[in-house]
Amino acid sequence: MKVRKAVIPVAGLGTRVLPASKAIPKEMMPVVDKPVIQYVVEEAVAAGIKEIILVTRTGKLAIEDHFDSHYELEAELARKNKTALLAAIQNIVPPEVSIISIRQPEAKGLGHAVHCAASTVGGEPFVVILPDVLVNNGGDKTNDLMRMVVEFENTGAAQIMVGEVPDDKVQLYGIADCGGVAPEFGESTAIKGLVEKPRQDESPSNLAVIGRYVLPGKIMSLLADGKPGAGGEIQLTDAIDALLEMEPVEAYKMMGDTYDCGEKLGYLKANLAYGLQHSETANGLRQFINALANEHE
Ligand code: G1P
Image (spheres, rainbow, N blue to C red):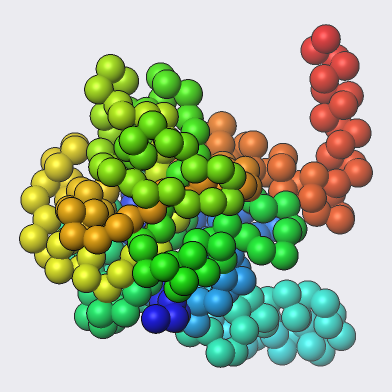
């Protein structure tokens, strides 16, 4: 079955990037010239997604506004013949892609947030994208999410994106047990178990879940039965661990670079990495970084 829908949970409070995220959603913080949320929506569109479901909360309306039309601004840019800027704000998503939002009334965890989209997903397979996590495939024509969608459509096995993390960071992630077999970059391998935020001495591997999932519709009924897990929250990881008792689930090893924009250092790194890829900023930024490096030698 074709994967047409994506669920993007955007109801988080952004406490790791306060005070920046006090009055604006953390997903609206810019990386070079676009808010973080725009990168992940563009990634979904590139992977063939046609319907994007934002799971949101009070105080996050700026995200919906960003993907809506802005009549006065468009009229003004048109009047001044600023066609490139006009195109940049009009064509954020192509016309055949729709963005809708639903609310998560209580902060009960990622699994609960995804389940809030159950009736809209309607039993179809879908993608989950965690918006803090940027995946940079460096302008390649196929992004990692696209490859995961193709693998799901070919095999029917849920795809969970993983990447290796240092041993002392495993307690920050969902960790996959692939029976000692690590997938090759850009390839998938069967998962035997999945555990949310294990202690370092109990972790089955250092293959961490990196915020991209392709899941069958039936995960929603497993989430509906979800009990609070790590941190007292209903965890998506636990529902996927239950799913793999019923059918194959695969770990897909990412090829791109990843940045966690939900924390300060990751956000700064993302700005540097994307700034070095942007035609307006690449040269100047490279010179600045080199000058800084020389100063601190
Ligand atoms: C969430 C998931 C976790 C995943 C992580 C990074 O955790 O629960 O399994 O590894 O995102 O993508 P959070 O960072 O929200 O605590």
